[in-house]
Structures are given as structure tokens and as C-alpha cells.
Amino acid sequence: MAFIGRTLPEFSLDAYDPSKDEFVTVTDKDLKDKWTVLIFYPADFTFVCPTELEDMQESYKELKDLGAEVYSVSVDTHFVHKAWHDASDAIGKIEYTMIGDSNKELTRELDLLDESGKALRATLVIDPENVIQTIEINADGIGRKANVNVNKIKAAKYVAEHPGEACPAKWESEEDATLTPGLDLVGKI
Image 1 (cartoon, rainbow, N blue to C red):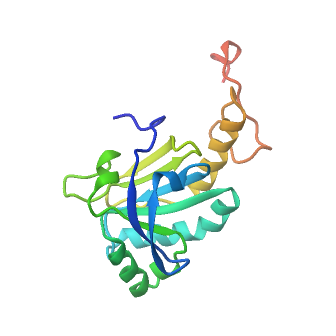
Image 2 (image 1 turned 135 degrees about the vertical axis):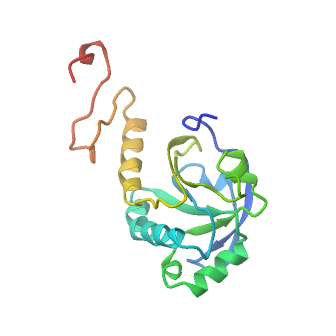
Image 3 (image 1 turned 45 degrees about the vertical axis):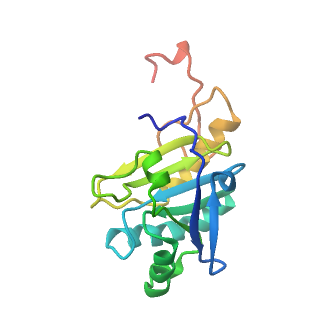
């Protein structure tokens, strides 16, 4: 199923919010009206996953400064997220909310459930209308680099605010040149 342009389904899931050290409920409505990075990962207490979530924490402040929120999602429960946060030095650094999708509702609805019943290693950038703007899916043994999401948020926000323009490869900020797709560019780039 196509991902880009798809609206997030309705959901209501239990989560652990480390910034408040409390359990919360996160719904699709909580993601509305802001940019969101959803980072799906296979399982708590594993190997590649904590390196990715710790790396995302290192980009978290910059993403927040851009008006984006981050949520991690796995098919573990919010209780397991809390235990992992308390037990792991890497995960103990996390300040963003960790969603538990133990009934696999959201993961399945987004076609991100693998054959073993775990979430795929996927990162989605969601716009303020809850529409998917980017997705990255890696094989289980290949970790993601979190800071690329900073540029994805910048580019997605720019394109949303400047209809008709496009951000080429290596675009990083408004100081960089953009493209206005049209007949005059065909074969010229």
C-alpha cells in the first residue's frame, strides 16, 4: 500500500512519557497541528533499537525547535517501555514519548508489521494534518541515522509553505536554492 499522502488512521494507545515519568494515552488527535516523527522499531531490550532511540534523543531538541514532536513505537507494552527506560543507560536518556502498540493496531494498520509480529524499522514524518510526507524502512539489522529527520522536517515544512517549489538533493535550509518544476527545467538539470 502507498504510504506518501496517506492519513494516519485513528488510534488510541498507551504510552510511557519519560519527561514526566508517567503513563499517558496518545491518540491520532495528539499528533494533529504539529509536525511529527514516528520512529517504529522491532522490540525493547534488543541491540540495534537502543542505538537508534538514543541517536534520536540527540536530535530531539533540534526537532522540537523546528516545531516537531517525536514518538517511538514498538509492539511492546508501555510497562515494558518504562522498565527498559529504567534499566538501560541509552534508553534512560530518552525524553520523548514511547508508544506501546501491544495489540499491533497502529503497526498493522500502517502495514509496518513483519512476519514475526514485530514492527518494521520505519521512520515516518507526519505533517500537521496527520498526512505521511516521508517514510524510511530499513532491514532489521540496519540502523537509521536520526539527524536526517531534521532535514526531512525542514524540507517538508518548506514545501508545505511554498507550494509549487521543490527541495533538491542536499537542500538543508531556506538559504539553499529550490526548484520550481516546469517545462523550462525539463532536460536542463
